[in-house]
Amino acid sequence: MSRGIFKDRRRKNPFLRTSGSDNMCGYTLALMVLALCCGSCSRVPVDALLPVGQVEAEGSSIVPILVATNRNRTAAGNAAMFGSERADQTNYASIAVSIPRDASRTVGQVQWPTSSPGDPRQSFVTLAADPIEKPAFVAALAVAARKPRAQGKVLVFIHGFNNRFDEAVYRFAQIVHDSGAPGTPVLFSWPSRGSVSLQAYKEDAESATESRDVLSQVLDAIAAIPNVKEVTVLCHSMGCFLAFETLRARAMTGRIGAKIRNVLFVAPDVDAEGFRLRLHEMGSARPRFALFVSQDDAALNLSRSLRDGAIRLGGIDPDQEPYRTDFAREKLEVFDLTRLRGRAHSRAFDEVTSVMSMIQERLVGEEQIADRRSPAGISRR
Image (cartoon, rainbow, N blue to C red; front, top):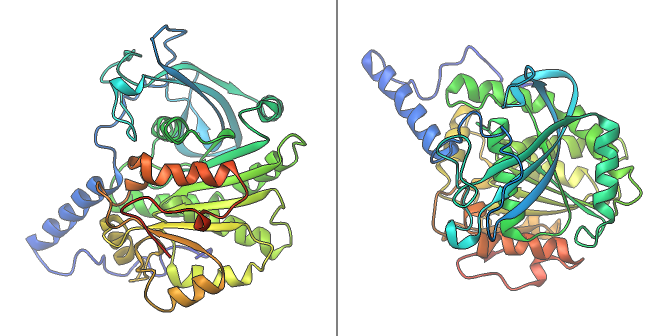
């Protein structure tokens, strides 16, 4: 995987197996399905990160997020802050997002503003968005980790394919707010193209691969802060590939990091066979892994076609062999979300009362999620 996602770029696209006009139909269908599986229901306006300033909205909550990214910094005055190209250095930011009261929104979803500035009574709005340098990032994280609610814990979120920077910020704010998870939220945003096409998928896969060293350096910077006692990595889709390759490389060099305790894979777009074999290579000192899978995940079925038919980890049946035996031996926690409602690729974040409550429990104490009772509709393996 580290030598390239696509083994032979000259290979005929798996969606284009017919000739003539059928080729275009197949290509168009693939794009439509990718858009439905991986895109937002309605995309946030491109100027959503333009701060509206301090606003008063009864019952609203403010979610502060620290950001580390290897995206390029946009020109001064550009509300997007960071683009889709790879930067030569790691950039940092501090962002505050206002979320309306639960009675005015659908819990588990992002209420995108329909125009800018958004109405804080009805939608997510940005209160502050400031580029900062690494020393300020470290100092802010050290201060936040000392607060009682943080409990010395940090939650690092890594988004997946087809995410603009502003979309990743708002989704993470929703996760933090709706889960009620303790810990200081840190977003690691890699340079996804933020668009839906087969070429964009290929470029995103390459960008994720090229982001491993940067993510590893960010994890080192977080772990080096004395006030930080525990780090949990929460990732989605292609972001799980980035996280796993980064952690595996750290394990191979004996520096996985004692503070990295938990790794939560949501709909992981990861080679299932490679994961099964390489997890064992990481040894017993690795973090605790929890997998959230859905057998009806159409996005991962498409990814399987694009990657030479390799089964994706997020779409496996955990009752089938060799997964059942291997995962039991490795003491993995696997949760099958197939029976839950909503789009398979994002239902873990949408079903806040089911899945996100388990993420909160993982962050609250040292117990394994498997020691808790699973909510209705979720099968635990």
